[in-house]
Length: 218
Image (cartoon, rainbow, N blue to C red; front, side):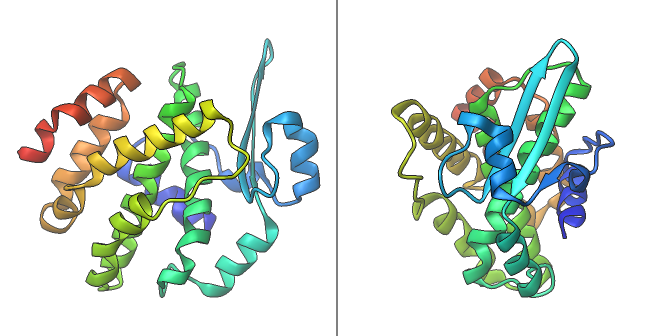
């Protein structure tokens, strides 16, 4: 499942980097807390662990083993149901973060935490809508935007800076994805062209692009 989700995102953005997320996967929360030191929130089921020094960049993706087990058993890639979305979105967010950091590193470009969270929200939306449409579930695809961006809950242990970052990412992604579903239904190639251009912008350019809304009116 992880390989399929990673490949889907890589194909959408045409941003392959040659790194298989499964080779960097940690499913033991104790090991993840040791590696993450103070970076891990309590009771979290997904975290991208990043360390950089003179030797280069080190990545690990923590996805809780129970979370992966539930999702594998539910098999949402064949039959997606609303009650599976929370688990699916956690996995998609982790894969999105991994892909983005790895691709930026290969391009020798930096990435901010806000950009990671923004891209993660967009990727959750796009992947879920495509999955629902592929299963001919138009009703679920229509409701994804509200479930993802309006019915949002934030971790209780986020500090003010983290909470502001997550809320900003949610708001920007909600605006960007508002008309994206229509494009995914009516003209998928055009939607993919837009997503690929957006992916390659710097964060300030992405925010300006969202505020302008020019692509959505096209």
